[in-house]
Length: 454
Image (cartoon, rainbow, N blue to C red):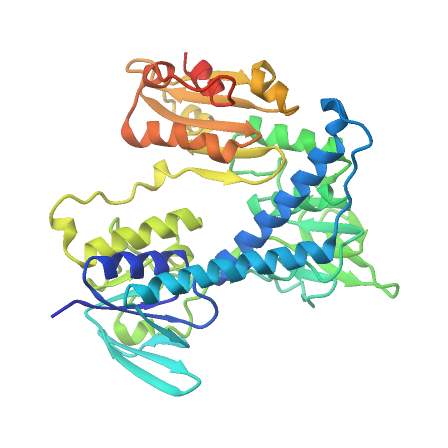
């Protein structure tokens, strides 16, 4: 008898687990209340990157006179951008749904919850559907965090979900939160020609990133005219009579704009899942603790994606889903590598892009660890000069004794693509000489990776 695998949540983790488990011979049922592919993925991640791509194209065209062109200008078609985003979402959702159904996965449109260790109920428009499961995956994602001092209205005071895209193009966007999502919004809206103010609660944007990387992004923001309120924590938002919004900060400063955007994290969707009925433990922050195989305290119940409390990346959720499917099917007793979150590559789609993987320089110094750090600016790259994009650099960290690549950071055009080379080196335990000895295309931005490894 095939393993009965029930998945609650069809985001990147749930979708990957369903597809992979079906290939391995499981009887798979997936329950999703919104959209196969994931609300956070298709309503947040994909639209934001589409908007960023449009902003980058707009910037590139408008500075193309430096590449030997004249009278080349572009203007934003906001309605056209909205249609394009919807088209991309529809295509990806259709592709994901079609794949699962072609693999024999049962897709139930509804809300799933646990009612026992092996029992799941799906509430649908046609009534309740009761399911028995040998293995269960919880992957219900997260939602934007809303502080008690803010009341989003979807019009002028926005959460991230309201801004992909907003109803109207802001004349002045005040972004609250300088983490990954916040800085992407700053880059996006400033590319569209909007005035932008960023509320930075720390003394640098991207407080969890390499200070040198953060400084490069701050310089770009300042060059665009972005206002940075450093060391300021928002504590209130007021709607004014003329329709404007005023953001009040704890240091007495305030910013007035047409819109305010909350980009201050997310909350896991763990309530109403029935975890207590199945004996699944939920921690103080609403996440479900799990081990290196994504197994909860209940051996046959797994968790993936934002709900797992690990790195909140679609790529991580997807890999978790694959590994969970293999573990549920017993493959961990054979060749099966568990996830190593320290080796996950991540990217920030600002302009310039930022990407990193593995050990960070500041982290190494804090631990007193000896490392070799090499850095090459893109201003020395022929392809970067050809592309008229010489901003940024490649930085590679390695073990001075063995030459093994430990990590790296990239700031510049196509950083999200280029980091894959360093990520592969970190994952496979390659040495810097392995990168140096690789015959890269010339001219190519990737040549900077070899030069930084030398």
